Amino acid sequence: MPGRSKTVEVRDGVELTNLDQPLYDEAGATKRDLVDYLDAVHERLLPELRDRPLSVVRVRPGQPAFMQKNVPKYAPDWISTVTIWAEASHREVTYALCHDRRTLLWFANQRAVEYHPTLALGREPVPSHLVLDLDPPADAPFSAVTGAAALVRQALADTGLAANVKTSGAKGIHVVVPLSDGAKFEDVAAATRALAARAERLDPGIATTAFLREDREGKVFLDSTRSGGATVVAAYSPRVRPGVPVSFPVTWDELRDVVPAEFTIREVPGLLGAADPWHDRMPAPQELPADLVAEGHTIPVARVQAMHEGKRRKRARGD
Image (cartoon, rainbow, N blue to C red; front, top):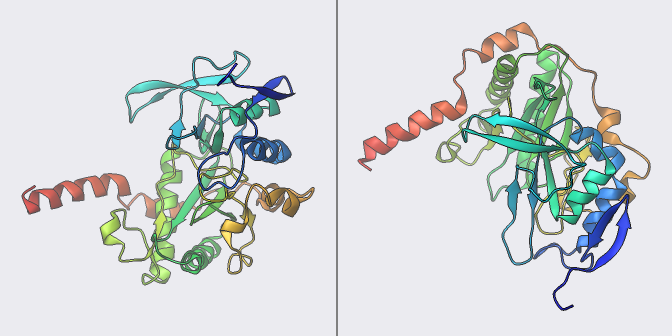
């Protein structure tokens, strides 16, 4: 029947359809390439998703990519879910919990390219990681963000913390510090602000904590707002960008030489072999130093400060 989806194969009980369709414009890959990649790395990716409310970025033919938080009503009943009150949107959101290969394959068949778990674990959320997102200006080379990463590395060392690092799969870098049990959301958020501020002070000509884009003056933004119920793209997750690059683990010393766009869904399985560098290089969970937390509590929350400053500037312009 014309236009009808064709089941090409079944894996782990999941029907996979239209596998030879282009994934999206500029992907240079098919839906099969996405499914095969996610299946190849599922043993590495699933630990990053398990027990974390999951948002995904999906693509449909001829449509812009979109983020999906709520599990669709047509989802099979074997997909685990958790319902959480979203303060920002003032509504309940029913998220998927991606525990197994079957769930990951189902999402792949839905053309879910990107996987964004929360930084909090469990149905009773507790913070598990501190994350700094290093975001360079749109026209900056990757060397700009690696220079800022060196500042963060030094700030971590000065503070007595160890971190893992990965490309974002886009143009930035994610710095991830695993946390010991018992950390409080407000203290993790404060420590993240303080760590960003300490890195900025090492060389304010390279890095900035300015939340408003017009205040960054072409510097790399040290985004300290990934806390609480925030998400971050998982290690090994593909991204909706030309060539379908992947958020890929690297060492601090490798950062200077990597080309993030080369870590694509077609290349990464061969680069990994049997290894799991994200897991293998992850430091042991750490307690946040009291002085870092205390300093952070003196620093205003960037989003709130930016909102008030934006309103003030609007009034000053007479808008």
